Amino acid sequence: MGLTVAEIRKLIADEGIAPESADIVSQGTLFTPDGEPVEYALHHGWDPVKAYLCDKTWGVFTVQMLHFIKNQNYDEATLHKVLSEVQIDDHHWDWLAKTLHYNSEEYDWFYVMAEGYPQGACLIYHPKPSCISSGDIFYVEYLAAAPWNRTNPMRNRAIRGVATELMRYAVNYGRNHLKLRYGFSLHAIQRAMPYYQDLGMVRHVPADKEKLFYFEMPEDLAQKLVVA
Image: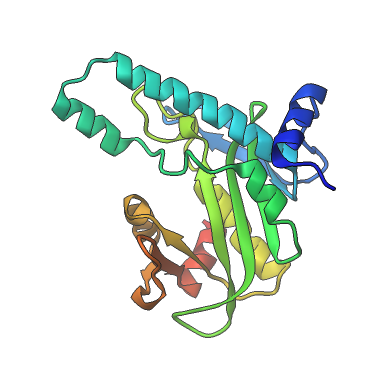
């Protein structure tokens, strides 16, 4: 009988197992909102330790942020505004459990690592038929930037562009390694819709799920994303 998720989580913590470092496929520079450079490495591969670090470090930050909000004694209107701006809809995601579940050849994991921590994570599934055109693309199962890289009331965002960099590499990988055409699709919650609309993604209502809205990136815009 294999280990449970809880047992694997405890094993990683107790043994101090380090994340895989031989799976770096790209390196570069991202920037803080003030324009300060941050060197990063983009990793491609299945790695429970990176997933564990997402759960641990992102979870700690989210709890600290919620305590911060509670301790500010905001009036009702301000509290409503603050809560409408923070992005914690994915706080319940268990990245380690997802990693152990999605471990087959039709899935690919990507991570942006910087300053010793996961700054963003992405899981894609392939192939997926396009709903707006011909050919196969990939589907984004999960995509998230670390909570300190999002708008929050506790401190300035740390790094800009993490999610976009993950998508840029995934599009390039889909085309050059998986031999898919340029493009990808996903389901978005309502709060995230403006982000994907700003990217130029197209709604396809027939593919919506309950409270999740289907978007697809057209081929020409996906190709431009790679070379941006």
